[in-house]
Image (cartoon, rainbow, N blue to C red; front, side):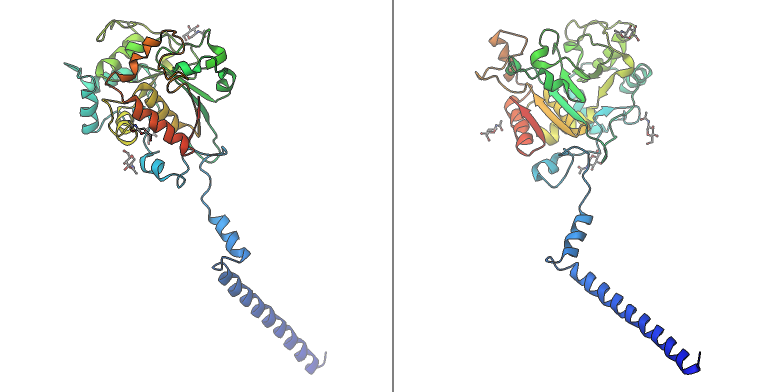
Amino acid sequence: MPLLQRFKHINLKISTLTLIFIVLTLTTVLWSLSFHDPASPYFLLLKVASLPKKPCACKRCISELGLSPWFDERFNQSLSPLMTKNNSVLPEDVYRWWLRLQSEKKPADFNEVIKKLFEIVPGQDIYMDWGASRCRKCAVVGNSGNLKGSNYGAEIDLNDFVLRMNHAPTIGYEKDVGSKTTHHFMYPESAKDLQNSTILVLVPFKTLDLQWITSALTTGTIKQTYFRVLSRIKADKDKVQIYSPQFFKYVYDNWVENHGRYPSTGMLTLMFAIHICDEVNLYGFGADSNGDWHHYWENNRLAGAFRHTGVHDADFEYNVTMLLAENGKINMFR
Ligand SMILES: *[C@@H]1O[C@H](CO)[C@@H](O)[C@H](O)[C@H]1NC(C)=O
Ligand SMILES: *[C@@H]1O[C@H](CO)[C@@H](O)[C@H](O)[C@H]1NC(C)=O
Ligand SMILES: *[C@@H]1O[C@H](CO)[C@@H](O)[C@H](O)[C@H]1NC(C)=O
Ligand SMILES: *[C@@H]1O[C@H](CO)[C@@H](O)[C@H](O)[C@H]1NC(C)=O
């Protein structure tokens, strides 16, 4: 190639490169500028890419923040609803508050009681497993007479977890309340035998309750609290869980706002579900269509006297469940 031609060729190459460089620079500058222009498609792209990821795999997630200031102000996902080997040392204020719940005369040494308890039951935390791939649907089934004739049974059983409390029977009531129970919440005075597949969640109101569950799963020596209780209980001890006193106080402070002496088992169970599930369906809370408060397995309307026992504030608690539903956090079935 003659020298001049070669030179031209190189020159052409250089100018092509320069052109490409200039075009790239310009595009980049324009591109980055347009990210700040709300009318530009780049702006939209950036916005979508920077949206927070959904915290679960359900259509809606309870733990998604930013949808309800009322909820966000109260909700604390970092608290475990369970007392475990890892968190059984209670903060002093929690312990003192919890001791006053039922004013036990001479409580046994808490640390000793816990040590014995966790020799019998696992004391592991298995619920801090939330994440973008989990969609855990839960039914919390209260004991209200409004379940009678509801036909909710099949729907309730479709949930991953079905949480019940106290005496709640299912046999003979399957059509309305379902037959599945994954978690049964109780204390010594409301205890009943369970199937092996059901997790017993002990709600402790006093030190003796923690001693009772240890005893009821082993020696059966404790037969009495403030009245006669089951000395032995049928339940899989490897599945027993203990409701955390710290979480108990959190429910009282943040959710029930210190109304009543302490929250009802229903409220404690609902809050447990809200912290371990991604979707919560609530059944059997509140009065029946006649405005009566009684249990679905009782005909006696006078049994409804439990509403104003002075221990719980049923009206305030009911308002909290209504607000949870209005804020799109739970589905309430009546
Ligand atoms: C949530 O609970 C933890 C543990 O008690 C506490 O350290 C934290 O401050 C709480 N967060 C909020 C926002 O209250
Ligand atoms: C206690 O916490 C440690 C560290 O956070 C963890 O490795 C361990 O598995 C936990 N133990 C239980 C019983 O939850
Ligand atoms: C429940 O578990 C106990 C103890 O492991 C066992 O003896 C019993 O057969 C089980 N019952 C059923 C119905 O599986
Ligand atoms: C519950 O909500 C109703 C309606 O907003 C209100 O009138 C009532 O005072 C509330 N009850 C309690 C105990 O806060």
